[in-house]
Amino acid sequence: LLGPYLLISDYKDLLSEYNQYDLNLDEINALKNYHKDLPILNKHKISNIVKIILKNIYTKNCKFKFIEKNNLFNLKSKESKTHRELISFIESDYLEKISATEYKLFFAIRQGDKLFASKCFDKLLPQTNINSNDFVNIRDYKNKLIYYNTLLKKAGELEGISTVHLQSLYNTNLDKIELSNDFNELYNLIFNMIVDYCDTISDHKLKYYSPLVKKAINHINLNLNNDLCVKDLADLFYVSPTYLARLFKKEVNSSIVEYINTQRIKQSTCLLKDSNLPIHQISQMVGISDYNYFSRLFKKYMNKTPSQYRKNNT
Image: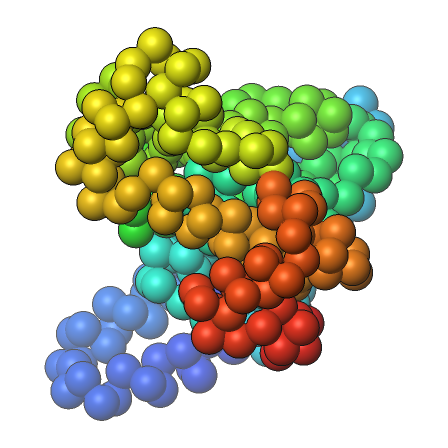
């Protein structure tokens, strides 16, 4: 914004490192003249310039602080990251560095699970009151949303979504983040992002299925806590149970019963990890009223009992 400039008048140290490049005398003199022409700005001058800029742009005083170069990397990683750094943090596949809740959000988006993704986000960024005139906190909040926008985009990439489509969605969200200075609007934006990314991933996963199988899958996923059987599904879509079962098996490579069981166990693993609900209650919440049957089914898919799974994953 203000440079290039020098913070000190003694520029000899700046030239010492050039010795390793075997520069000739003319090149050294050119560098000396260049550095002599640079303005010298101390903290007082920079502070005055920043105050003038802020005073002419913002109606209220804004806080700002100097960060010494040596201390720059001692700041918390997310708080100190610029827009580009936030993006490269995720794009570099450093998923092992994200928190447990962020990973759950990442996993929920990949599954197209809007409800669980929203719950994860509520833990990551609980709603607080931020005054729209508080520029520093609003900017910090925007950076966090940029971070999550990038994380969600990465989840879509790993599900094989078209890069062109994801980039368009990403850029749209980025524009909305940057254009808004209202905290409540920004807070609600993440939930719209979750819905958009989940819908995009779900649509992609289902795009190769016939309309009938798409409807069946959507109905199953939205009603796992209810009784589900092939006959009721067939009646719902006015087809014969045999026809629906055969078509589903052909396209999904799984029977309807197998698919229902798989989705129920997936949902129960999330509840076991992220809640203190009794296991018999979790069993009922995923649509299995018989606790003993739920335990056997869980062990069949996860190679451990629900109790063992909870103990190892909490």
